Image 1 (cartoon, rainbow, N blue to C red):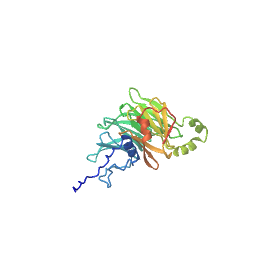
Image 2: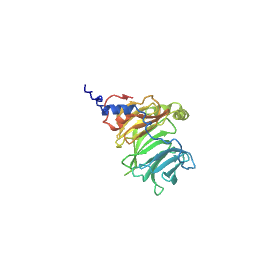
Image 3: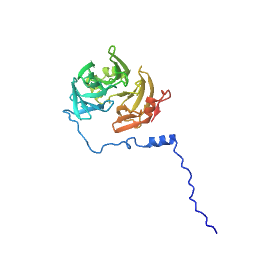
Image 4: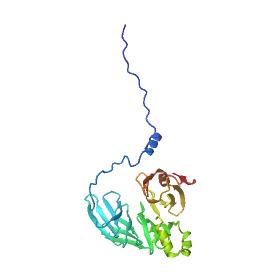
Amino acid sequence: MVPRARTSPRLAPTREPTAAAAAMNLALLDPFSHNELPEVIEAKLEVTSSVHVCAFNRRGTLLAGGCSSGDVVVWDFETHGLGRKLSLHHEAVTSVSWTKSSRRLISSALDGRLVVWDVLNSTVLMQTHIPETELTWASTHPLKRSICLACSSSTSSTFRQVFLLHWEPTQKQQVLYSPDEAEAPAAADGAGISGSASSRRQTTPLVACFDKQGERVLVANSKGVVTLFSLAGESLATLQVAGAAAVKSLGLSSDGRCGAKESKGVRVEPSIRVLALGPVCTRSPVAV
């Protein structure tokens, strides 16, 4: 008898995962798990005062920091040396934001001043001062350096605002959102200045940011509600962040993902990405 030749078993061809399945699996992963984060402190930047906020420029070569003393410092991140120290604010700096060219820097502070700096020459190009107001957040337009977005809170009441500031050709302030506008007269007729001031301390400031094209604005409040506005102030869509925790800051990554810093940590909301980058939602509010 002729022995039969042994043949290897045939394996069924494996199917490549579809794009929809790959996207679904990616959405289930922890967004911070595949990022290489340093496990030890590699270097320290020297500063004479505590830094409350900081921001990189577009290329990541310069780092700006806002200090509790009111100073704005700029480090060369490659050499870790102090490049500039900008002084004008009289109270703690609440935000710093670079323009696209990295030649200008915007800073806001609790003294109600919003300042545009020429970083190279360490000079003030433009500034505005709003009396009896704390500026809690400010950011530059992603494409137009003559427009910036700011959040304010009154020092004598619970009155809060999100507004656009047009620097050129003439300085003009355009209010986008004011949740406490209807409550302000009632507060003035009620407990008085001392009572409204105590309630103001318990009110979480509003936070806001532009979308990637600078055509719309995302605004978040203390109840975890994120609202999308047009630059004309029209409300386009609203959603509730899971957990309804107070949102302390908002930011969009390069791929459009929105990072919302809450009182319990940092959360990445893909639904906010749909609001910021996708077509304008005309349906009822979406729940995350």
